[in-house]
Image (cartoon, rainbow, N blue to C red; front, side, top):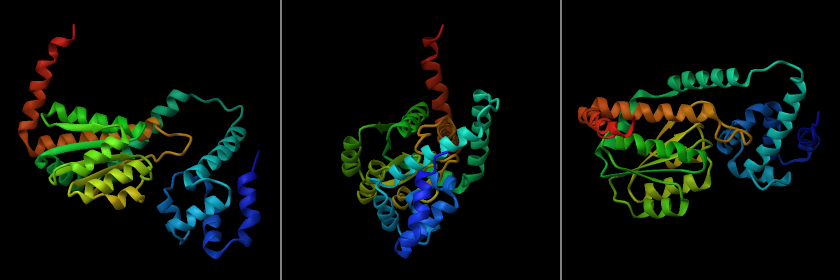
Length: 275
């Protein structure tokens, strides 16, 4: 198996500055864990700073933390395939099992009081906007769909420039929902920061409990099953985010029975669209 990246780190760590050496030691101690960490989490694990993590990655020839993790993920994936060669697998069964685990873990991570607060804010808002990049846009659009089913308008943006402009000009009683699996997507964090500076209440949905997005939000709901650079948009991480959306809509219905009545009405008006 190829150990080029990890071997290089082992050979260089003794020559690094103390802060960068701590980052290298953290990666070498738990390379698999590093794949699932945000830059904030690795900085905390290594007792360094986000700036040190970025410098560490660039000193190794990478453009940033995500680029470094991509190289690490490829190396570890090659190792895992070699170790598991010849073993019988059932990809569908594995997918189902990981999805079940993701849902159960998300159920344990969900803070009920935070869901109640988020639902209350959504009900009181004059405007709700949702934003996500790439696969996270699916969750943002799903929220907009579910909101429409209970009679609430939610504008979902997929274009970062439009989302930032909307965040910067929205009324102060707007609720901005930002979805980012990694919690480190630049556009997602930027939209959250702009919305918050404009007076909006910002809700984050992410698969990372510690990330730049969390710091930019007023309230964060955490889903299980963080992604690696090679598993972006993976089913388990997406289904756990969708669970959070459904939990929010369910709580809105509990707080405001009118939402339930509207859901019945919207079901009636589209009933003629099926044979």
